[in-house]
Image (tube, rainbow, N blue to C red; front, side, top):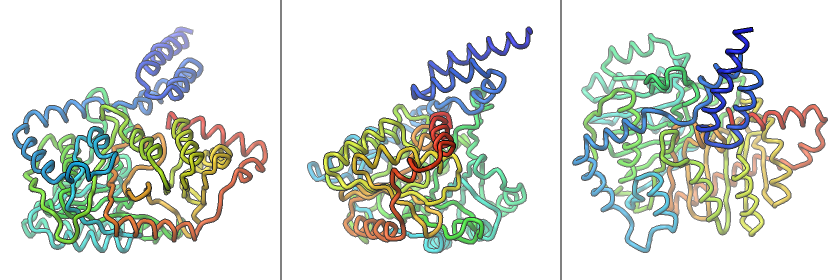
Length: 467
């Protein structure tokens, strides 16, 4: 009896913490109810999965900025000098700059990389030509054929005297063997886990993930997108089939902005800052406008949520979104409905078969609300769709953020935005090709299902705030 009373008292006290700290009211309610009803299971689950504020990272971020204030000021001055002329920047530029604390810059060139072969051929070729340093960051690294190709490329450069630094997420890369790490370190590569459990307050916290995928060489070229390092991203896993994903290769001053994100993550993992090239140089290939938006649970605001809300509300002509995990909350559903009702061409592209049963089920419940407002949803059939892409009027975005609670509030993500006409046109053609390989998803797909399916779908949707 004493143990039962203790568990319920602990559940009640923990529910107060959830009410005061969980970012969404839906999540707070879900946790409060479960903590008081089933404290035996919910209390340990909450302390492992429940929090949405990454304690310690933001403090370290401020300390790093203070310690490197002179350098930071010079970096900021150099980047601001690359801003577009006053009056020529997009209307959203000032808002995004406040969110990211990074400027929009001109003088950039972007190359769209569609699917795994194009992406990793470009990345590995670029690593082979690096002369000073290589910065790598992936959510997942597998010790398979592609993982070994990456290791060989990095080891070769490290032995040639090029400084190589690698970050991986310890949850996403939980199966990465110690032998893989040891072989890279023996070659001179500095490889580390992001270490989301660092610090006493985070010791049992497993809900934060570093979902960013970044490769930078010499501070001159960067790659960002949806691919991780594994043979399945090349379509070589027969259980998954063809893999549809998108990356971008960028040159120009936006590379320094991407490097800021990588350097902050490295500082958290290693408590150090390698000497990097912080001098932005315009790309000789184009003079496009580009913007880097890192986001994560250590931000002052819900950066990723605010970005998508603003993008949807500001759209005048079209908003096309591709996401493998489409589980929006009510405010984003309302924003999509409003956009469609005012005449914007709103299209959502999702996989026909997701790799998460709960996400797949949840997706059905959104169809009636979206369809009645005029939003068109399509399911991609020619493989597993994993790209994270957005096209708002004449602004294209490629990054790592999914359209779900985890990317909005729990993951460290990064999104790149472009207005370079050739990039926008290429992104439009990519979307159109994907739509052509898709079929409409309608409200009837959900409403015609048996009651038990609809119950499972609604239950999965209710779990979204606490995922």
